[in-house]
Length: 336
Image (tube, rainbow, N blue to C red; front, top):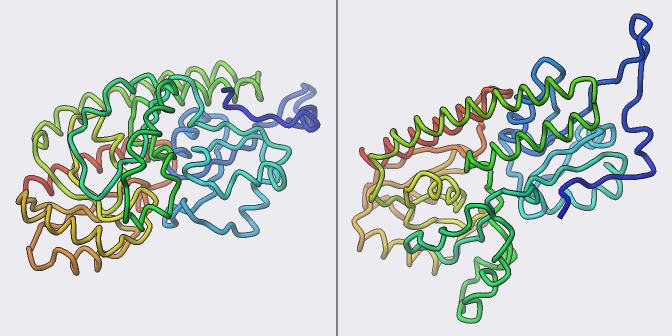
């Protein structure tokens, strides 16, 4: 599937032109991104040309968000919207027919070569053998994956918050996906702004080298986590786990951070006792009261990891720093 949605009526108006020193020069594309990590990747590619806008504030949940007038205006004026697709921000889809009707939309979940995983089922995860074979996505083979085992999930009230057959949208936490996206972003920007196409391509190449170097660094750093279990606040980390060979054993909340059921929490407590887990990872966006109420009696070490980059400076450096902080937070908690 082509990840680029284009509005043919507005195609001729997509890039206004201005006269500059007697030379016809294209305006820098007005780009809007959904969340901070994606903003960071686009900022890497646009370095030296312009800066993208951010739609969803870093301290807000992207799963459910009500735009402010200024954000709606940014969408309305955008030439390009770069976002993670329906599974991450289902509320955005109708906007491409209304507010953002004149913008091209780059759906990163549909870019060829991107690893897309299905949501994990239940509060306790098994081994990660089922991740094998997805490495090129590779949209092949997902239909059968989505249909397996859905008849026997009785009593999972907390699953009503998301589509059972949906994909896990936290794809940016696999840096190999970011490498694929950088090329796609550069290609789309080059199409909109041919005068800067070579710079976009060069920036993407440099960003890929930086992220690849960070991946190798994190592989060594996370060796101390191999074979050690930990719990996470919500199921957002399987892409990171899959890439670096580590394994969370369960999550308090679902992948959309919805409120867990009493049955889910009871099953987690039993798992916590049985496996002797001592690390539970919270997130800065959410209160740790739930973790304390469920596991406080066991006195686990509660670490904090941030999949979005709530406290990081927005810009090109956010994404590599996000990965480094995530690896450090997991390693410190597990080995506390």
